[in-house]
Image (tube, rainbow, N blue to C red):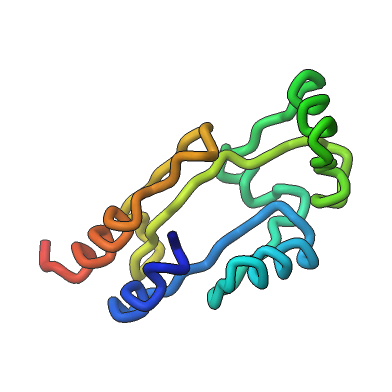
Length: 127
């Protein structure tokens, strides 16, 4: 949904940046597959996610599930740590202040697009 709201985000003098734990070649595939026109950065060895406290270890049971469906994290991430970041969205204003955030361990739930846009609109309102 980020690609869908990109024109409106840019109309609010903001921009979208995505961060993935996958190598740049996989990040490029993600951009190409979904037609993304914003930066998709690579978080090498999940260092940024770790600094935010948003990293979880994938234990042997979940690792076996990943491997059974052909998802080898070491191939995508370039290390054997088997860590994944919690999905998170941060709306950051001028000066680096976090205007809104959304973190959910269920990767299927994301910050609603309207919440992102609302936080950006509210950033321009006087306090």
